[in-house]
Every structure is written in structure tokens, then in C-alpha cells.
Image (tube, rainbow, N blue to C red; front, side, top):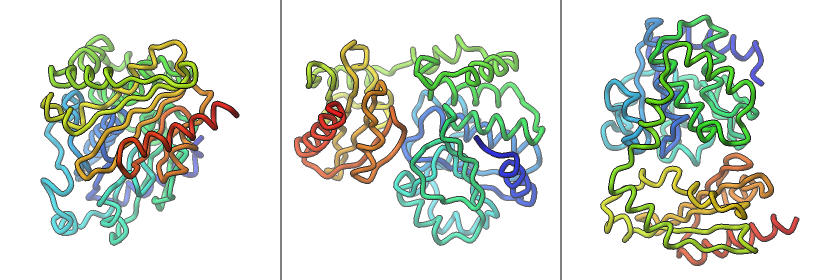
Length: 331
């Protein structure tokens, strides 16, 4: 839980800042996108000059949250251009780890502006001068919600929609075990503030492109079950993306498909990257702490949702994770 003292520090830091840069982790998910757009809207409303920045491509199903397509670091804007803006505050949302910031981490190290972190992950590097971190929160959007309450900032229908997306996606549309009373009370308040859950559900979960659907089919065809069906393993290769015309952003949440199998306690999706490395996404029902597995190889996340980048080839990466899952299941 974030203390009132920390909220006060955050409010004071924002209060004395005029030009604010807001970003999040690579491969932004619903919590990241929703929290970023909510903060941008709030700070703009109180007279701040705000620039949202993404570190990788925006998934098309979250594009409706942004009034304008945000700049992508390294593609639309360079380090030199960022420095020329002379930001007096940087806000990191849904991230506090260097390995989730890619090349932006180097810019951050050479930057003199203070940093405000708003995050709920257990794995963190303490990147903020002020940190609003609550590892018990189901989503970073909940911390943004609490910050708004503390500061007395107005809740518009657009902000409510963004926060609802943040909270609903990180709780699996209120299906995951992190869905507690606070989540539902917050969701109810946001609905009262103008959110249309049916419309958002359609936008997020019934809006697949044909390419994404074909990629999912490719993934499902690689399914392998181990340890009496307790561990599900799937993969995607670079050739799969070429054959389906899908992109890396189309992989979001595909790992959850195999969790429909009732025996599955843990799942992994291995995605071959263009540079030959393997991105491994991990999920658990709770018996296996996948965060500990990811941390062992330099990654991180939550007990039931984590990720890590591994060296190739694919089979080598699979064996590493298989051995770790086996150890965890035996314990």
C-alpha cells in the first residue's frame, strides 16, 4: 500500500514540474496504455505540458485510448530530440526495471530530471526519486486512481475509460485471483463515471485481425503438455509471423488460451525474436511462482505472470524453463 506521505511527495513533484515525459515498459499492455493515457489526461487538465512516449509499437486494440498516436522511441523521436525538450519530470508507469525499458534505460541514466515511478510489480530497480509502488495492487491503474483521489483531481469519462481498461486487462476481465473487493469497487465507480463495459469488452476481446487469429492458430498447433498436463508449452517462430503477416504485438495474451485446459498449472509461450533471442512469457494458476523462474534468468514480473528473454536456440530455451517448472511442481 502506498503511504499518504509518498502520495504527497508525488503531488509536490508534479506541482513544481511544467514539461513532463510519460512512458512505460516495452510491449505495452492494457494496464500500461490505460495508465499512461489517464495520467496524460489528468496532468493536461491541470495545466501541464505532457508528452506520452512508447518504447515499442502500440497494439491496435489500445489505439482508441489515445487522441493521437504516441511517438515511439527510436522511430519517431531520437535521444537527441528528447534531450532538446528539457523535460523537468519523467514518469515511469507500470515499470520500475531497466530490462523492461530497453534502450530508454540509457537515456534515463544520463538524464538530470527527477523520476516518478508508479508501479505494482514485485521486481524493481528503484528507478524513481519518488516511488508509488504497491505490489499488492492488481494493476498500476489502481495506484493512478488512488493518486487522483488523494490529489483531488477531476475524473472525466475519458480518464475513467482509460483506468477501466488498465484494471480490467490486468485482472483478465475480473477473472484472475487478483480481482479483490477494491478492484470491483473501483470498477463500479468508473462505470458510474461513464464507462461502457460492453463497448470496451468488444474493443479489447472481439476485435482480432485476421492476421492475429491466424497467428494464434499457428501457436495452438505447437502445444505440448508435460507432467501429466500440468505444464503447457507453446512457441512461435519468425516464419510464423511472415506467413500470417502478423507482428509481435499480436502475441499479447495468446498465452492464456492454453490455460483453458483444466489440468494446466503453468504455461509458457516462447517467441523467436529477429535477433535470435527467445522471449518467454510465463503464466501460473498459483502453484508455480513463475516470477522466481523469470528472475533466475534476468527477467521478472508477478507470481502468476512473468517474462524473460533467453538466448536461443528455441530448444535450449525450452529445456531451461522445463527444468525450472519441474523443480517448482515437485516442491
